[in-house]
Image (cartoon, rainbow, N blue to C red; front, side, top):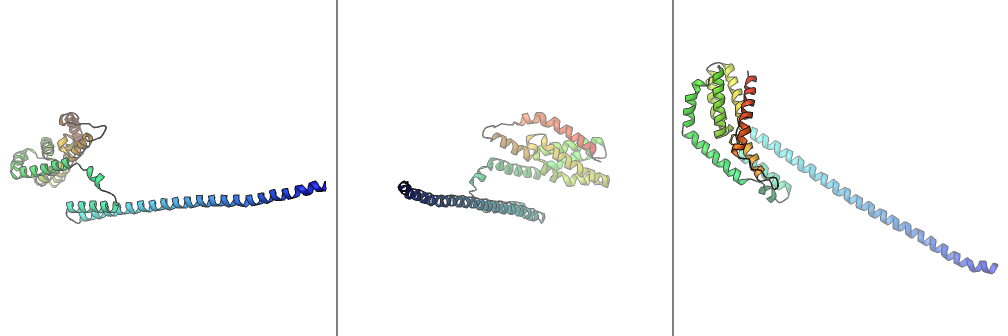
Length: 254
C-alpha cells in the first residue's frame, strides 16, 4: 500500500503543477484580450469624439459665415460678391471635392435668368412700360373698388411678363406717388396692395416667379421620377388659385 501510494504521489504532483501553470496563463490571456477590447473601445471613442468636434466646428463656421454675409448685405456691400465669397469660403472649409456640388448647378437656368433680366431692362428702356402706366394711372386710383381691380390686373400681368421683382421696382414709386395724391392712408394701402398682389402673382404662371422655374427645372431633371411641367398645365390651376387668393387678401387690406 505504501509502495502504491508512493508511485501515485509523483504523478499527482506533476498534474497539480501543470494545472497551477495553466491557470496563470489563462488569466494572462484573458487580461490581454480585455486590454485589446478596451484599447479598441478607446480608439473608437476617440474617433467619435474627433468626428463630433469636426461637425461642431463645421456648423459653427457655417453659422458665422451666414451671419457675416447677412451683415455685409445689411451694410450695403455688393450682393453678388458677398454671396460668392461666402460660397467659396464654405467650399474651402469643407475640405472636399466641390465637383459634386458644382454638378448640381443648373447652368441653363442661370443663362435663362441672365437673358431674361437683360431683356426686361431693354424693354424698360424703350419707354413702353412708362407709356402704359401713364395710360392706366387715371383708372388705377385705389380710392375706388374699380381702381383697385384695375391696379391688381396691371400688377398681375406685369409680374408674369417681367417677373415680380422688376415689376415692384418699376411700379413701386409710381403707385405710391399716385396714391399719395389722394391721402397718406391710401399711400400705405398702395404699398400693401403692391406687395400682396406681386407676391401672389407668381403663382399664376410658370414665368411669374423664379421659384416656379426652379421647381420645374428640378422636376424635369429628377433621375427616376422626372416630370415635365408645361406652361399650360400649370396655368390650369395657377389662374383660378391666384385669382381666389388675391381677392381674399385684398378684402383684408385696410
